[in-house]
Image (cartoon, rainbow, N blue to C red; front, side):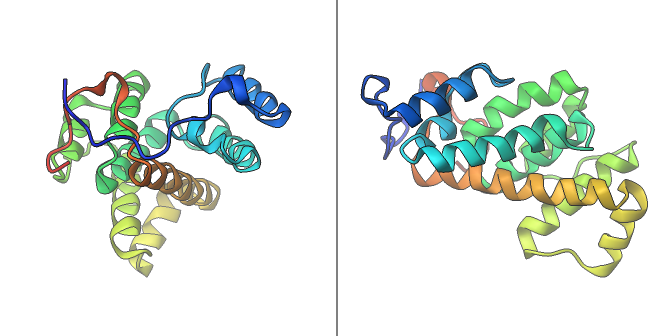
Length: 189
């Protein structure tokens, strides 16, 4: 058990939900996420933001052209760069279930470059890191990414990185702690 800083903004109390908040809560809870937690719960303070963000998130996570293993790798890189423990905690398990190597996950956790046997994973990792660190990708990496992933998956990867940046900022700004108030998994957080 760790003493995390107090959460700055808790989710709205369901007993005080407006009709729109109830509608959005139900839509999120009955979808593939199976519940309303973390950033999605905080977004319910602004139900239209919650509705639109969860639609984008559903697409990025479940309906994009990226294989779940690639999506989860990009999410882990984003969570690591932002030091978002909640995001890391949730998506580490999803990444393992999607087939991402525990060695790759551990290297990302330690902010080290993983050893890749899969070119698609390497490109996704490199694009995610470079995009977050430099706010763009150079021509060589872009050309490599399009050659390996194709234009459609590159668009989906960029959208996913943007969405999980929103998630990370929500977690960090409102200090959403990991589930169960667990000890930090990411060095330096």
